[in-house]
Image (cartoon, rainbow, N blue to C red):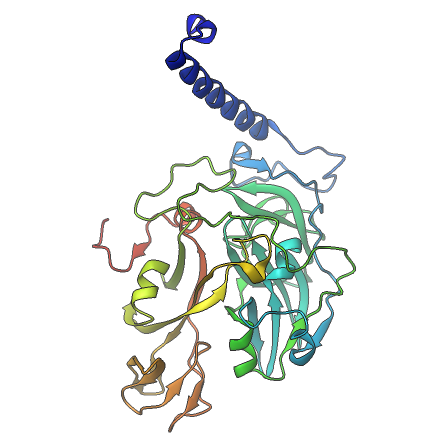
Length: 385
């Protein structure tokens, strides 16, 4: 190795550069893994209660609360939001009863967590840019209502958050407490969809939209992760083997029914924008539509390329099981001819105003979903592959 490092011949120089890069990568990896939490930073966290290997948790760079959660969210009307939200920008849509709120990813990308309420339900809206994972949780645990912040740590490239009541650490992707007093507890997920702002206003005209007046000075509308979702790239601070069945950075829609988990890759959704399927004995449908902006592409979100939005619902409606198709670019069911939108609402025909029941689903990067759920089925691939 000594001769390799000293040699000036071109082949050896190239090999030397490669060797130094490799050694540097391992050095950084080991330093990141070696970073340990301190009692000064985490005085109330019980690290004796730990369900994962501490070596699997890395520093993402910012310190505790370095990416600040939004604890007192303000909201504006859809009309006012049009002044700064492009119609194609993605928003997380959450409906509870007759109330609907939308959380633009152009804001979440800078904060990752919003502690909020819809009616009487306390929720936490989360977005991990590195996994492209937007998940909404009911933040009640027994008699407690928890508030969440960011630890500044990652596990499998996914956000590790903490609750301020016990300072236990929680895995965003699973909603499970992995360190501290609450270890083993699991947050209940609240149904949510990611669609374009224009899909939101076409369905929920009276929805409230998270305001840019967050109390923080951030470059809302810009992307601090420029070019991160290039499909051939590798994820940041992810050291596990990448599941070879799909490109690491491909977006996938997951559907969970019982113990069955099935993924629908974006490459499939582009070819099949309506998919009638059955998962775990439950008839389901996947709707997708091209035209929503990626928040992880260009520096300016408005200048980014478009990607498909995807949602999933049960096909059972009372005693009837519907089947869906595209008719001149419009989703329709074959049984009644009613027309449906991406949020599962009938917008015309005999069933107008009817809403399909959601299924447990979400859109993520393939590497992240498969890292936590390696036994998932992939739509269009034979079982076992």
